[in-house]
Structure formats: structure tokens, C-alpha cells
Length: 261
Image 1 (cartoon, helix red, strand yellow):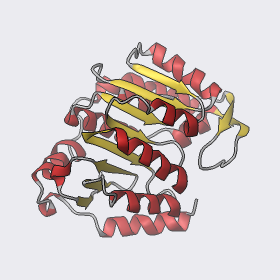
Image 2: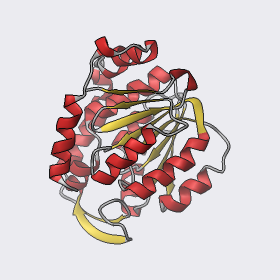
Image 3: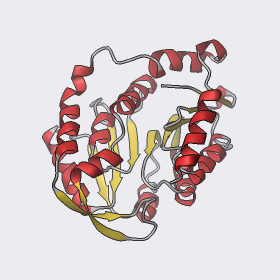
Image 4: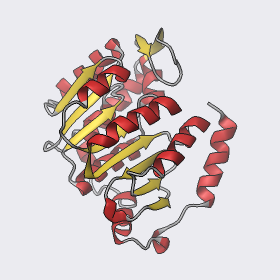
């Protein structure tokens, strides 16, 4: 990961940010005001999840994990403090709440998450009990922790699939059911990101949404974002710097926006 690249990307992003006065699409104007810029009126509904996050950030238990992500291109075991895993892998609270707002706004019910980690973001995705969340994780020790959290919150609408995403995702997508919302937060490299997208795009509902995390994490993730935001099946996109949102509704007439959160 290049710090210089991230700093440069950050400044480029802010130079191109627009506000609601530059949004001509009724859909995106509504999305900007009701979802992106609208803070949740009552954060207390997520207080128990955030209490769990705080506990994880203080937890000094050593966990042996199997790392299959961007930092380890090949299968690798290593020991890490649970607090460090939480610090580096969990989506910030503000983005978790944003994902919840997107799900509510789009009335998504079939949700897919690539990269469970400790399950904090998953609990947000599953907060609306009318949803069904399928999430993928490759490290058995991390899976055990996440499952404990799901049981604690009685999140019966979460299904966790264990294994290497490279093989498990294609098997899962043999199911013809359409997906309404996908969070891609697993392998932050160009080739797997493109491959996962190509598999997922065939199963997206017409008004489906894919959120890509860490789109400016590295040069190859930035390249993947640029290409996917112009993909023939993508009709609208929003760059929020940390994440990008891809829309599959043909009625959007190929519009792209750069916003701040």
C-alpha cells in the first residue's frame, strides 16, 4: 500500500467533490439528501453493536488467522492481537450506518457480504430483520468469533459460508436468486476484485447496488474502481473516497458523482 498514492488520491477526490447543487438527476439528488448526508436521528439502536466494537478494540487475545487477502497473496497463517484485527479490518461506524441507510432506502432484502471479518459490519447489514445476509469468511478462528457475535445478537437472518472465496463464491452464485445489495470487502487486489464483480454482476437485481470498500486503497484498487464504474452493466456510480457505490438500474442513464460523507 502506497501512502503517497493514498494522499494524492485524497486530494484529487476533494478537488472533484460536488454537492447537491450540481446534481441534476432526481434519483441521485434524493439519494444524496436522504441517505448520504442524512445522519441517523437515533444512534442508540446501534449502541450494543458499537459497545461490542469497543470491546474488540481493547481485546488483547492472540488469534491465529489464515490470511487470504491483499496483504497475503498466498495462503498464510499468522498470529495477531484481536484488537489489531478490529482496528484494521472493521468498517468505521459512520460507514456501517451508511450501508444500513442504503439498504433501507433501496428496500434491499437479499444481501451478500464478501469478507465477514469479526462480524460488526455484518450485524449492521442484518439490522433490518426483513433481510437475509449471506457472508463469506476464510479464516476458521475469525469465523468462530463472528458466529459468537451473531448468536449474541440473535441474528438468525445471517448465513456464514466458510472457505476460500475464489471457490465458494462461484458455487454460491449457481443459485439463480437475484441480489439486491452486495458489499465487496474481501480481497483488495485488482484481479480478484474484477473476477468477483464479473460473477456478481450476473446475479444483480435491476435496482441492485454493489458497494466496493477501499477503492483508493492502492493503485490497483483505484484502477479496478475506474474500470467498474464504466462497466457496461453499471448505469450509475458514486465515489465517496473510502468506498464506491455501483448501480445497475438502466434508468439512471450512466451518471457518475464524487461526493463527501
